[in-house]
Length: 84
Image 1 (tube, rainbow, N blue to C red):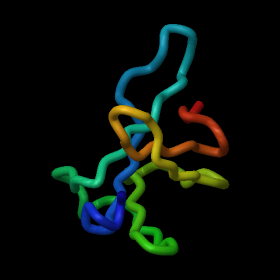
Image 2: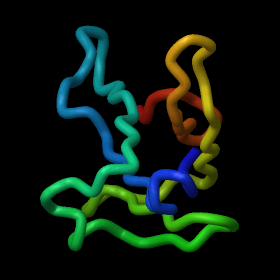
Image 3: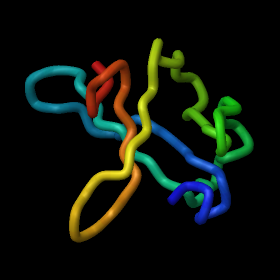
């Protein structure tokens, strides 16, 4: 799915914090954002991963295709769908 969309994956943290604290969800897209040249670049098997500038990379970032009706790419930060 990522390779079919050009082989680039951009991951950023959401701008909104939750009511209970500083949990931020992950936003994932294959479309380059306006500030794409500032993103941190990581080479992986089969595609390039770009992480939002100024964010410390997680120990692990898992990427998966989710959804039955509307297939989409999702990222999991150290095993979670959010970064705290």
